[in-house]
Length: 71
Image 1: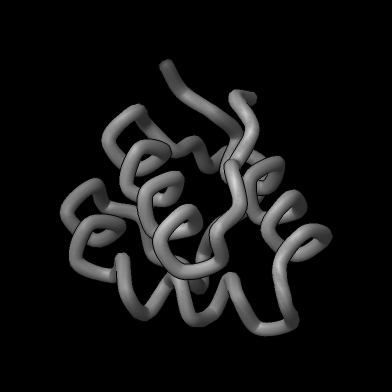
Image 2: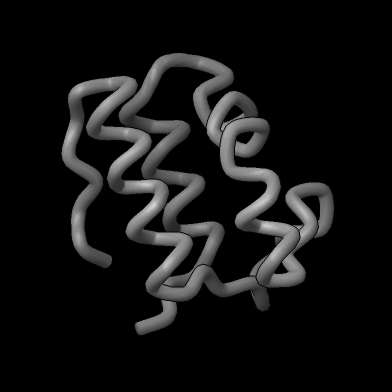
């Protein structure tokens, strides 16, 4: 399963406190780089795979006590 990165980032920006995406990126940097995703270069053609989505869901649940939707 692949999800457009901008869809996920928009949801995070809309539903979580300001700067949440930047904090999440810092915490998940190793994982993003492992999959050759540079946070500074995310655009319309960038997709997150299942491993990244799962890690984001866990992080958001633990940190913000919110459920990220299934895209």
